[in-house]
Length: 185
Image 1 (cartoon, rainbow, N blue to C red):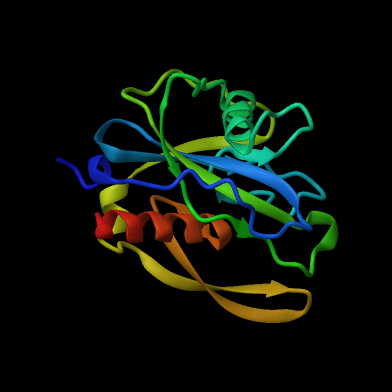
Image 2 (cartoon, rainbow, N blue to C red):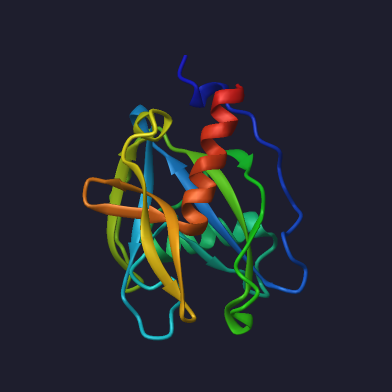
């Protein structure tokens, strides 16, 4: 049995920061424990423009829950319907930095599994789709750091570079929690 098959996650309903806008993403595992990421399209004014991420976005007033938000956003961004997908639960909610008040969000990452990959139809928010074997993350493959400047301050941030992708920030924190949860199983 794969480590992912033993994974048990709580159904988080809390948010990381009640003052932030609410959002949800879908970490989707497919056959052979591949994890799906999107490459966000470059768009002016988008703080996460061009980044690797999980599909997802901000909650809408009509969303029944943040789980609904994750499913709706995935359908909008990729044409992938997760209504029949198995939801394993949620990872810990994360908040974006408070020093970007107009863009401050609290994100709940939900973890799904699908038995096979359906054809995807990315919308204009998605520049590409990448599927990476989760075993590579478990093996700590391609871990490193990269320089990043934010508001005039230079940082050396943790990252993973796999197959021409750069994974870092909130998405990498989500992947790292997935690793921790699987290793505890």
